[in-house]
Length: 245
Length: 377
Image (cartoon, rainbow over all chains, first blue to last red; front, side, top):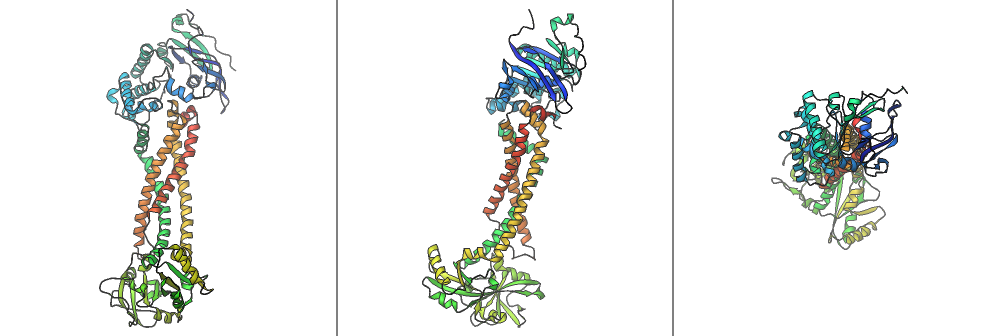
């Protein structure tokens, strides 16, 4: 079956470009990708290749200079309340966790839920459930600074699941972790993808973890250099590098 | 966890930031409350004197904005008492004198007729007595003045380079202006001041002091007695007094400066506080918080901090003015009673300034794209 079939896309981009005015840097240039519902995609590439910019544009955290992002067939430029899409459909995981230092693990997980329908008691119950899912129920009352980096990332993953998102967007989630903790985090993503059917789009530098994904998109100089599905990897030949613009 | 619990924790658990903001607010509010409070209480203390004496009408020389410069004939009192509805017209003379040898350089001396209602209304402390019509070279001292001069009943003091006066009584008053004054016979003060037959003004008692229309009618009738005569209700008279107007004007100018400094301080504190949290705003926006919720969070926090600052500042202002008013140099001259209205004004002021001061950085922070906010160092 052709893996690149053009149906059931959760994300699709059209001629997506992002130009940072300071320094006139083309962070992204005419990028066209699509992500199907339930896919596990790893974005790889050297620093400054545009991976985070692409992830931020997919997650509606930033606006493109030109081009369009479609989520579930709807272009972002036509969506009036992107905040709602972000809060209800996406769960974000960051390299530096971005937990609120004044809140306990249990409280941090509840923060996104203020935008959801749950009452106070239900929020606590759900946060406990999510902490249990990531194996952190025993650290629920600890402040982030009392947790190890691996534990902080687990709490951040629990928080990303607070509003039952369809998609997890993770920007180098293991960048600050030791190999043991990183392994645990990737296991978690694999579990979320397989057992919960979530679409996972993550950025990683680690080739080994990148291979765990169903699909690997490699970027260079703001463009897609290769886009390979796991089944095709053994036949994979890297695309020739782009000419310097 | 509820949203407001989160906001509350944000304030309580960021101790250093919250404490500094509250201190900044308290300083600004404290200055405003203290200055406006002293001004208001000084005005009120004049009012209290007339209320205690049940004086609804004050008669002075037209155009004289200071009691000291007002000159009226003592005989005018008889004409005023002929007006229907008037009970008594109590003529009084006021002077400022210096008792340098006793360390008091501005003592208010009031000359009243012995046996007049003004004299009778004084609350003489046990051990002393009032001045009787037969007394000569006798004075009554206000309690604060007696303390300042270190005088008690029976002691003597030199006045107007015309011999010694015996302190026959000490009267108590919670009104600063009055408690630091001295009372003597009208005729003696007239002689010392070289103003025989003259008074500074009249305190007029009426049959129906609670009827504003009646007061108005009597004022008009008194004013019609001559072109130099100006009768006003006690409230209007106090408000029109040059000293009160000067104190009020000064207090309002200093209060306005305090408010401006307070606004700038709050604005600065809030901008710093929100800028410091730009990254946090980025995180909250990234995990789905809407702009309105961000603004709400910052404004509610500002409200809580301003409320704490307002309350603490008011308490500090009350304590400080009370402590300072006990200082020998000002005891009795400055009233330290800060009324609930002034405290409410201070707290409302702090809430308005705090919330408005936070609104700008809150709106600015909420307008940022999550990535812009997250990049913020």
